[in-house]
Length: 296
Image (tube, rainbow, N blue to C red; front, side, top):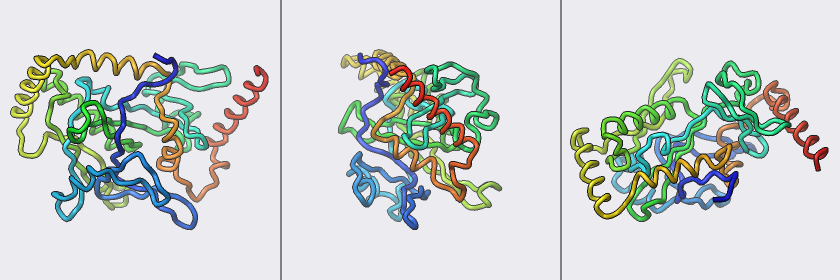
């Protein structure tokens, strides 16, 4: 296996609850009140819709896609959803520091170092909104590809917290048979004082509509038994995935880095170059450049 490259699940398309729109020549993220399933092809007008979007939207009330039937690829919750505090380089989109609230891996002029992670609100390095929670959820949609997934990327606390809780709970109640549970992504809304009482939307994971929890667990056990009899080794798949994720210090896709910056670090009214946190990033990049020149 090639070293330094995170081996992640094959991606067939993207799931989002928003899109990027252009206003006055500036591309800005815009939240939506429904799911959109796109392919991996992007044209000048945006991402091309995946055929699954049209198929699922046919049965959606008022054409609003707010639930998506899914299954997990792995039995281990943390393999399906990877979430950390992440600070990205706002130009290249590559991660510069990744932490879990306890320890972090940070790119410095001396290489990657393991350092304490006090969380974004207390970290001098990532202050100014540069460090955010960043989650990637891979799910199976449809039956066309046994190992292909659709990815939902988010920097939202509500989605990450809710998805992490649900996945760990379903893994527990099913006896470690998470990959066989009949589930669906569900869009939920709420308002807070910070949102000024306007709705904000986040993603939840629930048992498929019309199926009770005991029925879902019974189905998972039957499905797991059937797959084992047919020679499918789910435990080996989980082990291979864990090894692949751990094959690199940072998990990122070169092809999506510009979209990460565009979606999670939109331009604001302040010049980012005057932001203290951004200035620190620029200084670090300059130091790294000098170090490479001196060693080259």
